[in-house]
View 1 (cartoon, one colour):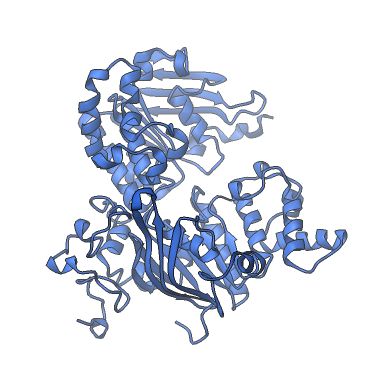
View 2 (spheres, rainbow over the protein chains, first blue to last red):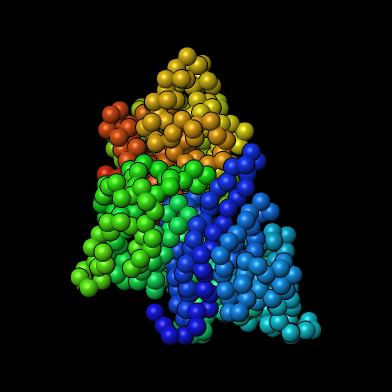
Length: 325
Length: 225
């Protein structure tokens, strides 16, 4: 995509959960991707495919029974091996801004937006003194277009859209080079979805050095905002490609990605047959084979991610020179 | 016929969430109700499902005006409705295994004998495997739990289905699958549907007609001046 050093570079990231009785759940397996400055990468897939676990792994917020392997480099720092002290003092809020799934639940219900914003400003920036904090909090709210006359309200007094902006304002305060949005549009209506993702895009474009990793199952939101798309299925990235080609022509190449797009009400509106496999009992080969109409004997062997797609018999790309055996 | 006549309803009589709303669903008809968040469409759906007593107005179900609501409504009227809500986590008892969640309406109406047959039957229809049926809500995904909630809504073979943002939390494939289940059920039973949502593309594709919120409530009466 770009010659510049990526903001985030994920290399072979895997997450396993150890359950009582020796069961292991493979939530994320061997994820590789980069997010470049000024770029928005959308990570899409069905609910329960491991998208949010990946976000938690990047923030060091996995529960104690999780094991990680591989690396996730944020500049020079490997997020997977960094200690809690480093993550808490230098990463969360400062180098990664989190835009949460449910802003209403993310905000502290018993304090006003102003008080939470001022606290965040005080913690993350050098601003000191009551008047200076007040002014800085109002500037922070303004950056996310949160109306200043609503600052003294409590989270339950805000609409879904305004709560989202308040959460975005908090995420932007630390001037983090990476914004991580985990299902930022769940439950919002279409106009609000459009406005929310447009605002996220604006924060990426406004300062060319910032990157956005958006985790979502809302394909329309991904199409609107993303430069590149990573499709996750059963814990693996099965397709990683340019968003224009993915949503337009020639369209997705992995049969799962095609099925996902065909399920949209403005396309074929037909579901993918069957259900995703249990992450605790994945097959040895391609995890999608059981639901795939292109499956053959080859699918008993795990397909590697080559040429943007992990499939033994992907839908051919439009340009013949892109196809490799 | 499911008729909502001049319904005013809400949680504070001085500031009702719905004012003077009128909407009719014919037997076998699928009606989409489209509106932005916070417009009051979920409250109207609750009134239609006999789950919320309106401040004024009348609900008429197949010619019978509704006089009592919630658990006080007569059983044959209550069981004529199947309801699916937006958030499966909030509408499923966390202590129940999925099989008991689906069977609960049968047990509550004294039809224990039909539990094994109906549950197995519906689990297949909505795409739940036997292994999933033994789990509790925290052990399944949102999509799997919503499949169970849809099975629960269909278990008494309702004549009317009310789906309040049934698919808002779900991915595209699960959405298409659950809408397919609802439509198969309606095709085989002739049940009517009121589907509430904010996604015009989805409702236009799913329903026979889509009613915008502004066509259901008179705009002039906003703010009750």
